[in-house]
Length: 179
Image 1 (cartoon, helix red, strand yellow):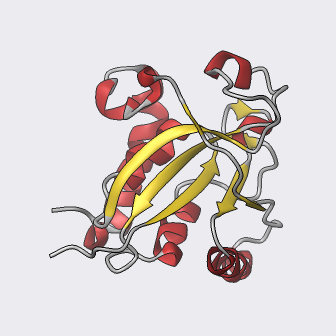
Image 2: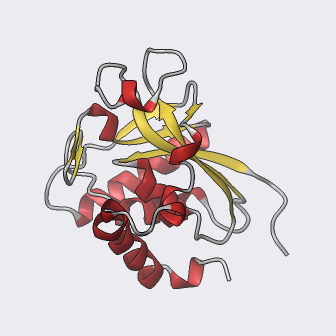
């Protein structure tokens, strides 16, 4: 039986396709929507966000059941599948839209994010640059960006960048996967 309470987490860790592919595999995750937040332009498009001029980050908005998977556990997976020490960059994706960010929805999420960041900093030798900011407005990405990995597994980006992250998460967090 699944939990009845739901929360929303909004996370940016580079390309939203990677986060989406990994997080939707987790037990207790009800929905993952790729989109944009943290910028100053209303209803931005993917092409506009990719210019790096809107201030938005590519993010996923995750609806989850905290009785099944906690916000802290989501962050544990999040920090495993991206490099939180590279400012405005994840691999070949460069720009403020690819920044590492946690957009908290409550004071409790903020406290948890700061606690997890302190734990993560003990693991990494380089400084953590993950932004922790209050959530404001979320703009869903275009339909073609939703569940991108599942719909485009033969694409080179999916095979070279996303598939290894999915495999790593499935290996490290197999006990948290949906069955």
